Length: 436
Image 1 (cartoon, rainbow, N blue to C red):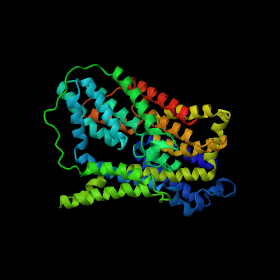
Image 2: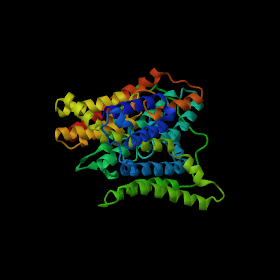
Image 3: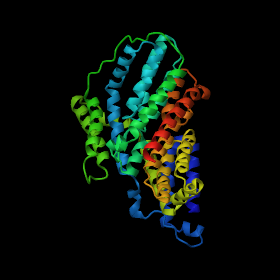
Image 4: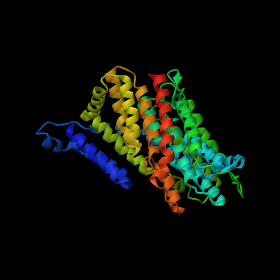
């Protein structure tokens, strides 16, 4: 257990220190854990007692293939969706109707949030940010507040649906939740509606904090969409995932196959419509294979930790601190997740903590949904506290830097902290009262 824990902590430190190499670090750590099963290194370190970290037949089983396939397929569909310019057309419509620039920024953040409930957060920022920059340049106003608003709204809504964020997909796999379960689960209101109420409160807080700019925004040339098929594919992802939730006894990879299947349909259709173009290469180029490899490595590492007893030990430790008090355990998980996610990427954190929360729930003799939901609320929304807490934030700041704007930490946190605390508090209270 000590060897496994030391290796894991070293892996985590390297993941934090070398963000550009996270996938390689995770895969290297997974390889080391696997080798320790078959080489006598662990026997040398422990004086002869063999530790069964990862039996060979469990290596591929440790990877949540449904999660990997869902992310892969959804990213491909999103690439086609962005290329169709439909998100830009939606943004044009909002800007046309906005009475002033402050309301336009607010509406853009709402649009980003709604898109992000079904599309990757980073992809959402890349869709909406150019529109905000165009408005800011035309009216000669600072684009920093608008891009911060877009980024934090994207992060918040990621917890609302099964396909909204990688952490949501991971929760769905852990808790055996389908798309519809994020709306109503076990006869109760689920994460989608909880997130929406938090989003509403946070949006009101954001409006109060945004600089008041009364100029009327306008667009010289409206975006023209000539291909609506990718939009149908995006709707199809949602519709088919909902339909699949009603299929009893379906294979574990059903949701992943649906997402990949729709991506293939989009690629084949484009190849027929636009021959002599490298459609497959262009679409796959937009898929974030770095994140997919990172997750594969992490799944093996986490399974190895479970086999070594580390996950159980961490769960027992938190249970002891909480003193068998459910509210204390729930509060520790939520607010610790908020704090850690402000500085740490929430993918490895949630991958580690999902099995830990299951152990805590088992120790207390309860179903784990309360702690699962608290973990997702804290970890997903907590990234908005700082400019480095989430990939969407880093992406927005990178876009601004390319455009000649440097974002100071306080400029971000002035909006991010109140926005985060208001949304997390609403979610924290609602999850407790609905699921305690």
